Length: 599
Image (cartoon, rainbow, N blue to C red; front, side):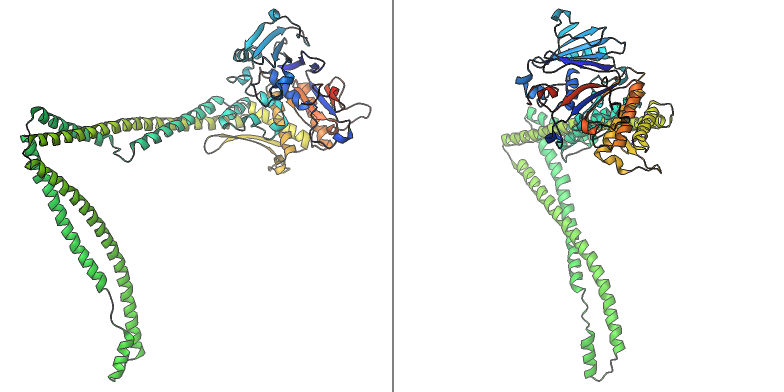
């Protein structure tokens, strides 16, 4: 598919532009000296690409000039004629005021003017926007971009200045995720897009499941996380609740009294005795440790001993004093280490005593309550207490059942997370296998594109270019385009804007050439194509573009006259009159794309 004609219902303001099947030049001439140093001239060479995008049913953007200045453009209707793969033509009609109402007309001859065509003569008149997109996708039949529609990769065929920042990631994808563009780029480069799409889908699903699992875990809190234990507690508490319900139904608390008596004797008193015995043992151990810490002092002082021995006339040599000092130092080191261990043991004992004290306090309160119940002679007091116990049991059961639900959901989520993780690992392996195959297969589409890319870069810069695709450690594809030096090593030349733009152009042309046999768009629009290049590289790039036009690629390039490539022959202009499809200039309104005052 190629561009054929772009025009409007107001030809005196927006005149018709007829495209060639090969090279198309939009030339902006700066005739006024005061404009020579300006970076932008607002003549319309960049706007032309946006108008083509608008006619290809771009979505409404409030910042797009047609809508931002809708009062100026509301009466405009634009027509884009394109050549289809079967050499027939399609005209797309889209107005500004009714930009969501689209018309289509197929015809055999090129360069038609359908501005006056009756409503009934359109093949499809005033289709809704979504329906029109679907229908246009079918008419264009760009099978090579399937399963995406025609809009997905259109930006790679309409490169504005803002789209030269990254070879692979267009400006429109800069605020999105890698899944929005990487599978598509991989696909047009010849890689299997399906495992890549599935991988991103599974990762999103996995992230969602993990988020839900975290929420469920938070809801569960620090409570029991063992389903078997919860089931056991439910069984025991359910049995207790049944017993208490039977007591209430029978209004007979003798069995309750016996059970509480047994529980008091067998459980509570026994546990209290055990804890008191343990507390006694711990207190004894604590006392001994405290005494040991106080006794671990060396009271012998060599200096005082020396003075005493001198007074009684006993010879006390320096060597004996030295031996005592070393012995004291040795004993002190041992004592210090022992004190560390004793303090640690003392800390553990005091911690356990604290826990025992808290448990004894709880048990004593429980025993007091049981004794109070047993000592009560009022059957209604007992009825009330049993009722309270039953309410607490039911509340516990309700909480446990809620926890069981959370745990069941959590276990199911963990199972799904494991399954998704396994799927991601499998897809990662599939991606790596396909990338290795496409890289090593000399006849693959990617190998062909890589070869064309290198030839273009070498033809312009006299250095080879390298296009590479490889998965990173997380399984995501990484795309790289580099310029190589004479030793085949990557250089930093591709970091500058000018060289990055060249790599974008080389990438677009290489992909188009490789897809020439396919149902694929065969045109490309490059804005400011020669900007910032030296004359030699301009000439080289123009030769490459002309060569690719001869191959069948329709190239639409824009430039200002100061960026014009050098003339090889002074008698022959750089561009022929047929190649220049639009000439703009800064001498008044007639030189602009829209021949009207600036808005």
